[in-house]
Image: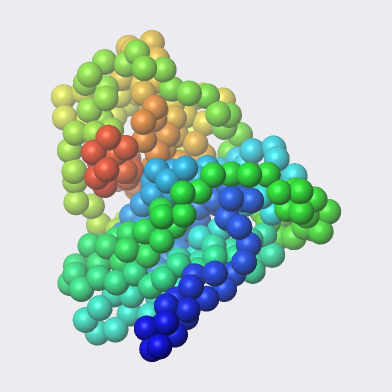
Amino acid sequence: MKKLIILAAMIFYGNIFSQDLNNYKYIIVPESYDILGKTNQYQLNALTKFLFEKNGFQTIMKTETWPEDLQQNPCLGLSPVLVEDSGLFVTKLHIELQDCKGMTVYKTREGRSKEKDFQAAYQESFRDAFQELADLQYEYKSNSGIAESVKESSETSSVKEVRNITSEAKDEVVPESESDVAHEVVAEEKIDLSVGSEVEGDLNSLENSRWVYVDAVFELRAYNSNYALYQLNAPEPIALLLKTNKPNEFVYRSLLNSGTVSYRKNLELEISYFDSKTNQQESLLLKSYN
């Protein structure tokens, strides 16, 4: 009898929010979580985007230009929020998915980690909590109720935020014709970088700027009001750097990977992303090439 009560409680907990996630088209990934504060701290935001996409969800960074249907109806999207209840020796958190009105429509079980390293602990507990979402086998199905909710949400803060986004990137796909060396800039070496490094600089100075990684030289060129990263003298870009509403931070998008880029005051580009082939977190540093 006791086991039945526990099982019933678990079922009730998992379904306490009755909205079907299949009715929502987008996951709107924030640049930072409130429990941490810094952009992509412990690379949880890049991990968020990676895991949702791996499990069939369509993601969009909060500071990217939103698709037209999401701009017209922010209620098509859900925003992940992390809630932490860590103790002295255990990192504990769960994921809540909130709708356009700030209401929680899904809440995962608590993920846990006993890792001592903060980054390892947060990532392990996040993955543990996320497993419940992975088990749902999400598949988007249009819902007329949510589709019509644009009438109720047209004056919400979500719409106001979309109007303030400065990026004008379009959904071009980066061609596959780059060289093997060019591929290495997004998959070769893992570099340990301090979190939250100070950034500054004039964005206009990035146009036609050159950068070096290992023995390869790269160039940033203007591309649809954003930037494209080319290997020097190559005809096609290997990645796009999409502007956000933060002047020194970009969304990184290559053919296989997506993540974030920070422009540092000492003329460095930090690229953080999850490699879709190896399922590993990567962090690279490009130095200014004089």
